[in-house]
Length: 147
Image (cartoon, rainbow, N blue to C red; front, side):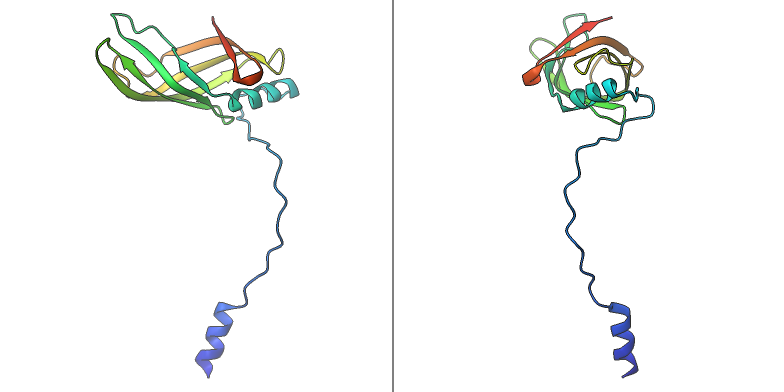
């Protein structure tokens, strides 16, 4: 009898949880990113944009690096998967790093800098930094003007 009471006390009754309403999308924005309203709007648009078939650098020597997909995250990190193309040969690879930006001039335009921290792409080395004015348009369109 003592064991039955002890087992009941340990298991307890299941708690009934009230359903919660879905939360509005409010990404955690990294501390190194501007916190003003316009910049937050730009960051939301930036992280929602899928950058496809993007060429970040010219590899030189006949090789080129192309990202199949580049993604910026609101925590200040980015990642990309793609390939280095050597003409007849293509080697798939992944890169990632950190990004920051100047205060946005509008919800669709800001100067963004990103640094390469990790890569397994042939001919690429951590430490490379890029800076561009990024303009985002409706329908997932974008324009990079390298600085």
